[in-house]
Image (cartoon, rainbow, N blue to C red; front, side, top):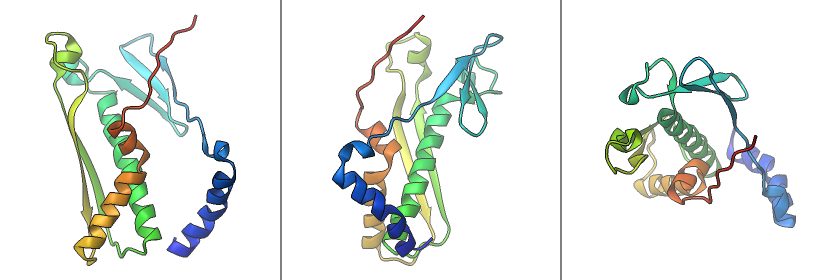
Length: 167
């Protein structure tokens, strides 16, 4: 897809959202069910069933997906798609590209053996770009990718979270 095709595809959406902001508000959903045989959650992905379980550092077998890995995978996926869309819109000359995310966790907090915070202490997102573009264009590409990546911005700016239960 080139910049013209991307802009043509997005133009009616942008116009509709400018005319009626409520049309741009979409609720995404994820659903899972607790496994009755093991400490795991079966998550419906829309394409397949993903089974998430405990990380081996918390006693898991390592056979199930780790939700921390899934968070990093979601970041990589979103950042990669965003990078490609931004590069396309900017007519940025991009050959092959890779996206990597890594994060540091201290499982003492998760296991309740210390008052360490639960969650990632740091996350690093790195792009490998095959390009001859000047550094200013690379900087602009990264700045716009960061700005428009939904997962990156969600992690970066803590959203309002609520928790509830029903019977």
